[in-house]
Image (cartoon, rainbow, N blue to C red):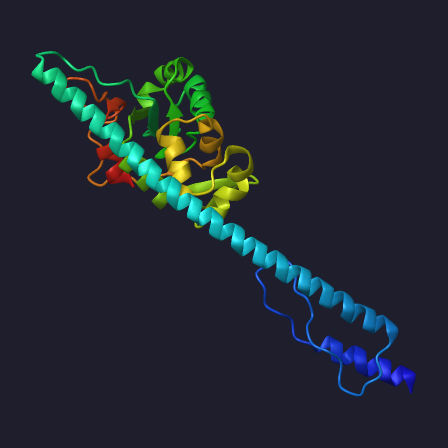
Length: 275
């Protein structure tokens, strides 16, 4: 009789529904049939499941509260970033006007950020430029990466100048690239940045970057965590430009006109056609 009751209880528990939760594990819910004799082991398991369910519910509430706080903090930081961008833009306008009224020339501030696009494939490519392109993470045609303006980077770009074009991206360009073609490198895998949690898990604890606008600000301003933020991004896979290239064999600054080399602010127009 006891064995029959145990079998009935176990079969009934096996048919109990699972709660569909977003967490990694689900906990059985429900109770044995009314009037059925429940063995001690089953009682202990039911009590353990109840304790786990309570603990899990508390963890979910705490997680939702933390996410809400992070979202609110991100909104405030986004407003601060927009104010910072506008202040900087207005400051440059005022300086240009002041120089013009005084009959002087205004020297634009030096750019801190580069965006480099590979425009040549692998056919007939010498070993040294190929290695430099690998170091710059430009392994495929139409790949693009952000780089910090500094002497070693500029020296490397000189070695591969006929194979790439680069310039100084604007805030709008940086934002559009990250939102439309931004992919993260997580565990050596290419993961789409479809949620702020992807950024938070990789850069939140150490670099204090919790959302897309934090990432945009860090990249555009070349902040102290630019290296980690840039390495977190997978190289951008751009499309062939609408309307095509002009002439890849000639440089952009040559009299005949071409494509490779430094475009400065004109890189924004090319990215717009490739994005």
